[in-house]
Image (spheres, rainbow, N blue to C red):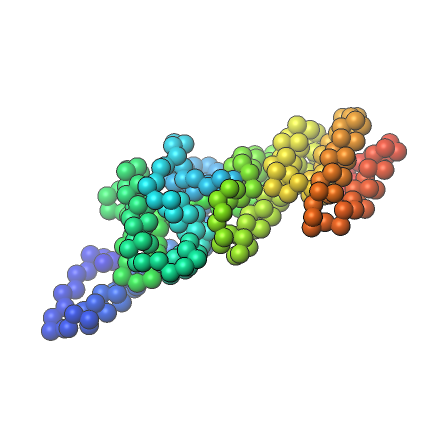
Amino acid sequence: MANNLVITPYGLLINEATAITELLIDVDRALLPESASVISHLQRSHGRDQSWNVMVRTLGPVDVQLVDGTIIDFEKSKTKELLAWLTSHRARPTRSAARTALWEVNVADATFTNVVSDARRALNQTHLISNSEEWLPRTFNDQLPFHVSIISDGEILESCIARAQELAPSQAIDELHRGLELVRDLPFSGTGYLWPDAEGITSQLVLNIITASAMAGELDLQRGEIEGVFWATAKGLRVLGAHEELIALRMRAHALRGDLAGVRGEWHSYERAVKSDSWANSQPSQKLVDLYSKINSGSPVLLAR
């Protein structure tokens, strides 16, 4: 217990003693830092010094990576998904919610317990936290807390965006590039997980990737760093292939160095992407039509949005 306080029940029935134990555990947990404070800490520190030990990578195929780059192998197929779910629900991780998300049908308590135990066992072998700490602390209630140094690449990207908004352009671009380097493919690519789409988590991650790509591309364009524009926008187009703002940035970058063939190439790629998108109306954006016409007429386009 907190402050090393030890309470010995006397003259109580077993169920009464258990109830008191659970109450004291809940009180002890209430003294832990709020999840929002944890995220705030990541936003302040991750770019300057190491503040994580385990990263759950969800910006692409899901895996779990240690700070030294080692990928952890788990015995249970659901263990990676559990850690991905936990880092996506940091504010209120519970056993019941995790079980509902990971399994479409009711499963035995032992099935879920085995997955949690597999995560503990694999993480304990890393020896990255002290003996007094636990990766997944044991509780007597529905709460499923996990160590603060387990984060996701999506959280890092989000913190990069937040920090970049407060920095000078030269520092902001470095922060945005650091986050975009984590993007490998569409979030949760190839997993078949149902809960990220159902809860809007995939959509939010895609939005964050697009936001970081557009911010970085615009900053690089203003600095004349053409290759930086292409690199940043390629990250966003990997997850949303016909995004108008990113295509516009690439067209402006080609125009800035006088490459009209490059502009036409981007335009034709955009047209193909629009036509192949079953959710679109198969018509190009008027904004991009106007930009394409302006570039071909020889008008300045660097500051045109």
